[in-house]
Amino acid sequence: MTPSLRRVWWLLGAATLAVALWFIWSGRVRDEPVPAGAARAAPAASRPEVSALSVSESTGLPLAAVHGSDEIELCGGLWVKAKPDGSVDDDDLARVTHLPEARARLIDGLRADTSEFARAAAILLALAGSDYTRLATGDAAASCSGAECEANRQAAARIAEGRDTLARMATTTNDPRVYALAFNTCGRAPPVEGACQLLNAEQWARLDPGNAAPWLFVLTQAVQHRDTAAQSEALFRISASARSDQHFFAVPGLVIDHMPGDDAALPAVLTLAAQAIGVESAWSLSGHQTLLEQCKASTLRDANRRQTCGAVAELLSERSDTLLDRGVGVALGKRLGWSEDRIDRLRGEQVAYVESLGTSTDLGPVDGCTGIRRDLATVVRHARLGEVGALRDWVAHSGKGAEDFIRAEQQSQAQAAAAAASAASAPG
Image (cartoon, rainbow, N blue to C red; front, side, top):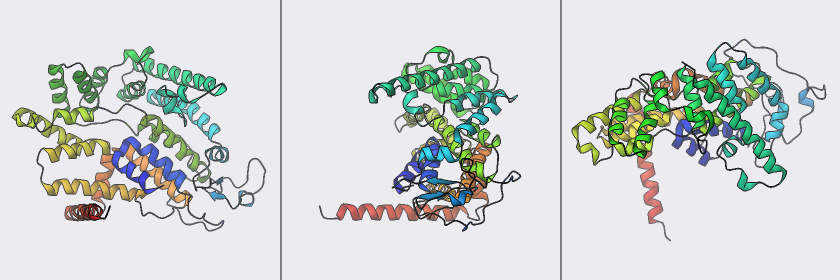
């Protein structure tokens, strides 16, 4: 992964974790491959181990005997082609990990599950693929010709059908996760059509009382309709919520729970989890910009609005489930005059936590199994605790105090200021 991609991950937080995981995965092999036989210890799996594949299913030969100098060892004895730039070749990755078969087994297993959410997740996972965002948003027609256009049309029709099925499921559900999944998947359809027209943020809010997330959409709609009374109501509902829960990692966590835990399966598990997050990354973002507009300096002169915005900032900073929400909460807190120490602590914690995930720009190459297990453990942790909960848990066990995070953030700011000053004073 290049430093610029890591900076994108940091700036956008949860909304781009799919991109982060994929580029961590595809960029991990840009350095020299680990020689055969130079395996290093990996953390113990959370599930019982089963023996890994030791021969190629296509040749019957030991996998170590069929790799070339341009191939990289993944995990469980699997090898994959590397492109000239060091990234993984997608087609070769799908071949060696038997990805289509793994996806089919996963979807079949979820469809047979007794949980309605698992069955909804199966529909979403059937939409996953490298062209999902382009096709789901209707941007494919401008860059195709002939047979490619027909293939795009058929794929887009399958996406629309799956989205419609998911929306119809949501119209009868009592599970707020199912409704959120359908509502967000429908959100990028231009225009909203079919069963997606039957979904609305108000119903999501009724199914999920105490959750601020649907009210962010209600707020955006109220602003678009210039309904000031509805804006005030939505902002109050956000401020009075117990939490902000986007359920962003629920499906990827489900993927990992339903997949085998042996080394040979891990590359496919990570790829499918990343693709699940990729579909979710195409969702419409909730109304963070609208929220910031509601709490801008001119509106904060009103004491009631200031109190409401203060409650919103506390909610997003402390009781949300994504780093994106937390970042918006910190930005609001700064606007509201929170102490510099508190702002620096919150920012320092977030920077340190992101770096602990293995996404810092100075990170060296990571071995296949070790790195894949680390990434999967991160997704499971985020599914269980949310990103913010996982951050808080990491901080509690980091052995660092508030002053450590404050000092690190202040040093970072000083270094950035010095670099900016140096650049500004450099000759033409």
